[in-house]
Structures are given as C-alpha cells and as structure tokens.
Image (cartoon, rainbow, N blue to C red; front, side, top):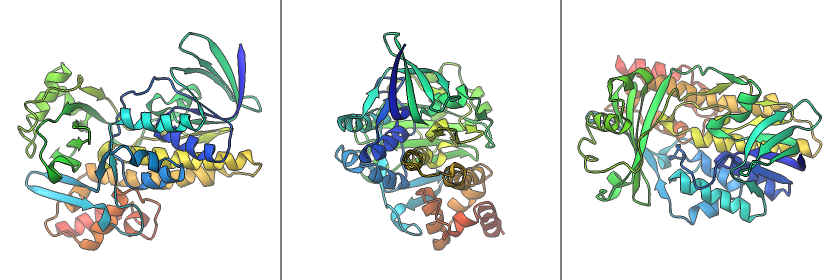
Length: 407
C-alpha cells in the first residue's frame, strides 16, 4: 500500500478544518486535508456570530469571504406572539466585532476550501478515512480514494474536523451522551421571490411557538432563505410521515410568519436531524485533537456551531504548531479546559432558553439596558470575557435575573 508523510493531517474541509489549514499554511507547515465529500455540498449551520470574524481574520480568510457579498448579520430578533426581543451586536458589552454573515454553507464552505487550495494546500476530496492507528510514535491514517485505492498517511499530528461525521470519536470510542435535553430539527430552503425590503428580508429571526419549540428564518443574499424548526424529538411525532407534508403542517402553526411562505415550493425535501446535541469524553489525545462538531455540538438556537468550530480549529492549529516546534503543550489546560469554558457558558444559555428563564428576559417589556448589552455579548460569541457578569456568573445569573423580573 502506498504511504505518504505529512506534518499535520486535517480530516474535513469545513470551516473548522479550513481555519486550521489557513493558520498553519501561513506558518509554512506541511499539510494534507482529506474530505469525504465533493464540494460544493449542503451543510447546516448557516448563521455565524461575530466571534467567528476574529478566527477567520487570524487564518487569513476574512478578505476572501468579504468579496462574495454574503448577507451581513448585524444582530438577531426573537419573537413570541406579540412580544419581540431584538439584539444589535453594536450594542454589546465589551470589545469585538459588531457584525458577521448569514451564509448558504454549500457556497461558503466551497469558497474557503478553494482559497486554501489556491495557497498550495493539498485537499483530497471524495476521500474517506477508513482506519486510524495511534499506537505508534506517529499516527497512521488509512484513506480510501474515490477509485477504491487506499493510501496510508503517516502524520505527526491529526486534527479531526470531520463535523457530524465524527470520525475519530467513532473510531476511538470517544463519544458520550450530551448533558443537554434531546431536541431534533427539520429544515429546507426556499427561493424567496417576494422578499420584503429592509429588516424583514434581511434580519435572522427566531419565532417561538412554545417554550421548547421554535422556528428560524435566515435570508441569504442570493435570494434563497433557510427555514427550520427545532423542538423536543417527540414533538415531531404529531405530524405526517411525509417530510414535505409535515413541514407544511408546521409552517401553518406560525403566528408572526403565518401565510408568508405558503406559495413557495421547498428547494429540497425537508431534511431532519434527530438528537442534535453531541459530546465526547475528551477533546484531545496523543497526537490528535477534535475540533468543531466532531467534538461538541450544543443546539442551533444561538448559532454557536461555526463559532466553536472556528475557535477550536484555530486553537488546535496553534497548539499543534507549538508542539511541532518542540515546545511542551498542556493540551488539558490550553485546549480542553479553554474550549470547555466557552462551551459551558453557551450550555447554560441553551438550558436557560429551554427552561424559559432566558425567554422571560428576552421578552420582558422593559429590559434592563446593561443586562441586555451583557447578554448580547454572549450571543455574539464572546464567551471567554469574564469581565462580563453574564459570562462569569453564567451558571446562576440568568435564573436569578428571571426570578427577579417575574416578582
């Protein structure tokens, strides 16, 4: 069997893998990327948050993204019956980006991969990892190409950015149940030919049907719009078995958006993902690190997926380079503990969203301006800034504030 050698092997060419590759390429590291699918390909996770911008900038990808005219996202709106909670990223606590993008991921991910490939990085598409051996001094990863041929790749370090494929967690028995309640999702795209001008046709909006059931509206600059529902898995059982019929039945339950999408045919049969939240026993091991959705995925309600993907991709790349250069790396403290701090903050907010406490704050008729700025910074992804009380005290502050305002 043919054998190749590289310093760092990256599994997956999504945003996490491309941020890793972008950073490492700038530091002249020998790289190889393997990607199971052919790009462009559909992916969910279409709403970014401002923290992503820092990571794209450090990976040298920001200018490339900006050229393509994706829909700019300046905040988010939450609606429940006649109540509205709106957040403007320019009105957040602390420093950081005031905007980001809403993106059709097929186009977005392809742009990132093309940019990385144009810099000379070898990306092998339609190439599947079929085995992984971490018992030797250097990991040996066996890949299978589209034509059926196999190759062994010996690398000094492996970054698993395989997303929901969760390659190394499966191969190395690293998966564990998530601590978050089980929710599922169904979604599709439409070509919105009669989209309203201004905010109504640009702003990402979440309509709450019940405390644990919500709908997303994400408009893109290409005229297409992403529509989807998230709810406890059992909630979906009341609808038709045909996903297209079921989706229309769900659309009919909307209040704010009632009737707006009735004349549109879905671009594809609505896709369903069961049990969204994912977790792992560890984010790293000897000569490997897990990044993005291959490690942890919480819930789409605050669009944190791509933020954690790019954050972990960049952090893993920095530490792998440091180790490659002969320095000792404390992966527990510098990687796992660091990432878990941010994950813990967002996990608290996801839990407080579904137990209703955060919704009580969002939809309060007279919101406290300082509280709103601090919560907005969390929604923007700045979840490592402990100067923000809503980060530092994340385990209890939302519940305490909700209890106070409900008195």
